[in-house]
Image (cartoon, rainbow over all chains, first blue to last red; front, side, top):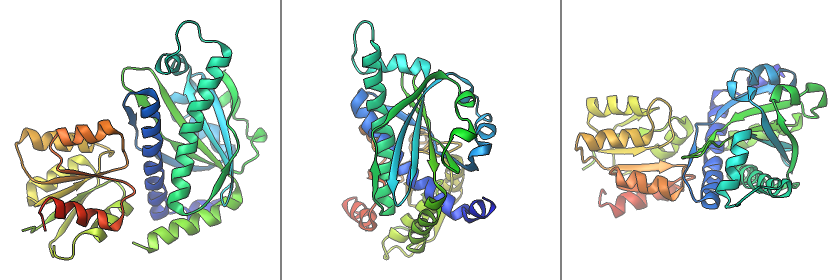
Length: 206
Length: 121
């Protein structure tokens, strides 16, 4: 891990942050079109950590103390891992309004909405990253992994199959709606050499 | 004639990409800023003839820079280069006086094409 952290130096981190920033811009545009409203994007923040340190790192941001709905979208190919989308609970209610549901929202409607939004958000982000790095990724359909829980209760290091977590905090906020979403990226250990190589190629071309 | 250039982006890689894409004809010093506040400080100190401006930045974002320049009634050409590709971001930037909007990821020829269209070459 120490070696991996050291390899992820300032230039590579800056390059990856910009790659994700561009990818999230595309994801934000897709969501804006879906919702018909402007999506405000925060500056992506990065932190690479061992999954054992994940909760300690997440506890630095009070957002993760709130109860959330958590979805995952696994991916494989030259990079392997999972994109995790976290929605604040009040945001889930706002989603129904944004997506034009009237009256009581059934479990089935809510599930459909969340999966659609996760697919757009995580899919667009990963597609954007893959296309900029010149790699191909395959995706598995997103699933809701838990509702109404805090990250601390949910992310137990022993139950996470991945070695590293790229805490990629990108906050999407919708104007006039209490909706925010954050994303995490879990990466397998073997994903780092190809990722570093691709980032180096980008940097070498400058 | 372009005598100096200001490139504003919090990403070092993006600043390098923009600088590499600048027309060869502009043999002019390039100043760099990593956020909007720094950009305004350099702008007032060095009076660059053109600004390439990112939108999503810490301290003060690109919209804030555009608003400050508009308030000063400054007509320096500003070309926005942004990952925020939403129509509303484009309209807001143009409304605040940006002369052009380049979407990230940009191609090497995008800067040249835009400055030609703006008759800045």
